[in-house]
Image (cartoon, rainbow, N blue to C red; front, side, top):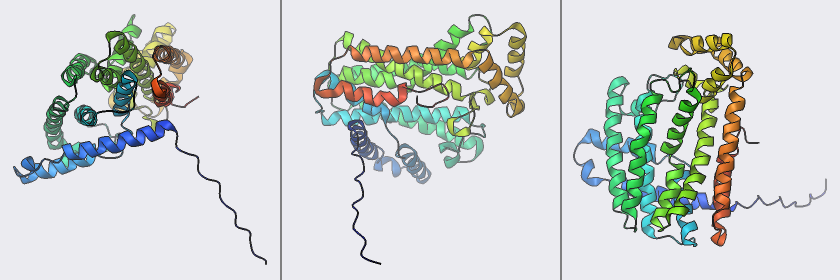
Length: 361
């Protein structure tokens, strides 16, 4: 057998501009977070507290895309018309990540008892109820650290931007409170109330507020801030509505069925009830009020089928399409200095263009 010719394998595709942007943001923000969570003065206070802080570091610094930080930087650069940002902006972005990490920890406490969710910080701190109580304390600690970080970032407008985040955090607590009571209601007018809850959750997730905070820090006028808020809210609504669909979907990898199992009446279920025939409404109402132990298997499959037949998923898809259109129209009205608007569109594209069951078209 003769010599085999050397075949040069094809080069891998070059990373896109948005992937390079996300990689840069993630590296910078992760570095800032690591420094912010190094607290030698607190470590010396108590051995068990030092162990808890180490576990918190592990949770906060685990690999993540950091979309809020990326949107914050994009909003700033779009307003400034330049990709150059001050060093303090990375610190503010890290503070924003800590704020949402504190929300996520408190959210985990609310979700304890759901066997379909993986064990998180609560289980790492201590077993059962003790872990929940300790996680509340840790969440409060991160909340305080987040505020301290944002206010000390040394960026003009940091106080106004931090106030904006806190105001939204306060307002959207009403949505979280209502969601823990079961979400939407199967009654006339329930679609409007269910949509308000989706909107509150979308705002709480922070996509819109991240863009607006970036604009505030860059000194944007009120009109630009409003346009960026519309971009973020449109994308946030699409993301939250997709989650609502996954709450009745199949497959734990997409959170399938979790919403129904937790006793929540999400938007697709409420929309289906409002469109259904009287006998279907009665069945949906009965299924929505099943005991927790009866909310899987055949009952979940039946709810899914009824929601599909009554147009609940189709109605959700329609609202998602309108939300995406709203976001893209608002984005198109913004300037495009050095291609920053194009970058922003590439960042939100994967989030905005999804079906109610989570697939990209």
